[in-house]
Image 1: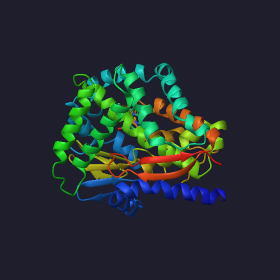
Image 2: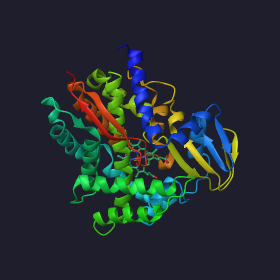
Image 3: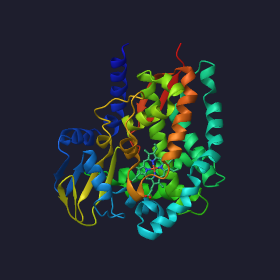
Image 4: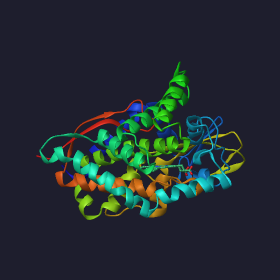
Length: 360
Ligand code: HEM
């Protein structure tokens, strides 16, 4: 198979995570992406890189509005946490997190996931398949539990955090009525909070932010790597491979926000109360430019998959380290995709199972 056709196969498979869970949204985004920003009623869809950055940095945002990441975090936790915070409170919470997620903090936690990868990838050495979604859940749940100093099973934490995010997303999907969705979302959030000994709200928010992104990101990246035969880069240029796979998959493809005041998004005026759909996937050219670890996107573009400005993802360093270690641990087996099932319920586009087997 040529490089070009392997890359097409990888892209075709990855599209299934969108078509499986959000077909209408995917079609709408594709249809409107030729303009930098498109207004539909009170919603402004920001497609271009400039529009995406304007939406995050140059429009005052309502961090507690329904249907935004901050609003969802607030409902889950009772409010007042990072995503929905501003100013001094936000800066104080970020400082607390900065240590856990600093270079030293990540180095301290790293043996947890490298040890887990050694154990859970062992079947590959014996020629057996593995489910990378299950392993990603274990990896992120176990790391998050350790980061938070919690004596809970990592897999239980991951299950609860994924259920809370999925129920929250269903409760807020625009358009269709979802009978019982609000109750289900509350029950899932309560379950997560119970697991976190007495409902530590910050822990719940962090668990949701870390686990759902990681469970979406690692398997999508590995599937792409397998389909496009990018494994050799995991041995020679893993940092660039991670940069490019994060860019090509953009695990959080849309950032839903609400304007709290006036501004412009790539020249399109917005006013308080307008909904903004910031399309990270288009801002980093994921839809049009295949991953090329030999010529990775420059940092100011690649980093946009983690947002921008004072609310940019504090977990980026850890997310990148986990992906680098996972791809490097898989690479010697040159695994191929046996089967991949799109997750129709998850908050973020992703696989519900991804079965990899060592190349024969
Ligand atoms: C591939 C994995 C990940 C991706 C793609 C990702 C992406 C993002 C994005 C796009 C934002 C919003 C940024 C903005 O509004 O400008 C965000 C916020 C956040 N992320 Fe991540 N993230 C990932 C992993 C993680 C991990 C592993 C953690 C924790 C260990 C984490 C913790 C957070 C927190 C706490 C926030 C809220 C920050 C704030 O509002 O101040 N993320 N992330």
